[in-house]
Amino acid sequence: MILSYGSQHDYDALSGKDADGQDGWASEDVAAMHQFMVRFNQELEESGELVETRGLAAPVHTRRVGARDGQPFVTDGPYAETQEVLAGYWIVECESFDRATEIAGRLGECPHPPGVYGDAYADIRPVVESSQDLGF
Image 1 (cartoon, rainbow, N blue to C red):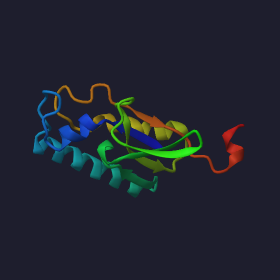
Image 2: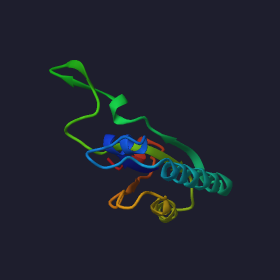
Image 3: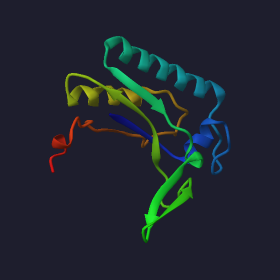
């Protein structure tokens, strides 16, 4: 599974909103990103490596459910304790962990406005098939 991350700030900027004194993305920058993602996903589909991919709604639309003293509680997002949230994912079935890493590395080719996403990253994690694969 390839996991990509973002923040409420990123979602706001992508929708063209002024975010913390920085201009939002121009519509042509958003269009270029979408075109890249469509091509990226099509290539993975054509190679037979794409199992599933999804983007996730902005953090403001998130609810966190937990338990305190045995009682459930719900908190609406975004959360002050974290800026980064899961923004989307790809499940790929490929020949090796190295190939999944290579695929994730291509995400760095995604067009973006200057000065944006200089520290963006993706995590690559194997999906386990059974509890025995967990190693504990």
